[in-house]
Length: 205
Image (tube, rainbow, N blue to C red):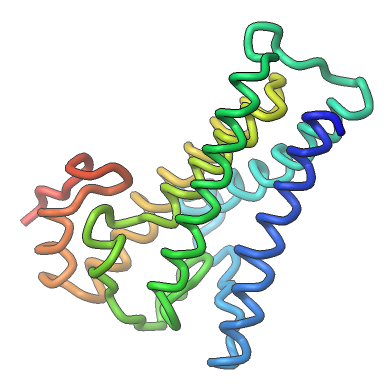
């Protein structure tokens, strides 16, 4: 089996389990899938975050398909067994962290923000290490998949995803959490990093 086929299979499995299965489980428990869609004003930073996230998902899916069909060749310097193995490890670690963090969020798990909804502020477990462990895990998974099928499109997909997540968190989720939870979130964000432990703490008073 080619590396591109493995990347495509892992990508599809990841989307199915972490988004499809998670949405179904949440729906069974609450009657909501957790998908809030595009709720930001068109053209705003938050809207661009959502649009770029969708573009990253589609681009990431296209990357191994293009390599499988011969339309895209892997980057020579990254086309090696050690890089492939590293990609497998990073992908599986990212997927595992995603599942654990989703479980920790429980009924509060959402894709996108509904400004009229109030969810619990989760601060324990992985959320005591970084404020956005699911996004950290999604980025890890994307980087791992890019190493398994290391072509220019897969690298671009990972870069677009990181930009999308930065916009979504900074322009949408953090303002929402501050408005919703006030000093409780600010106190939490002053001591816990955004995506990496110790980095991205909020200094706002």
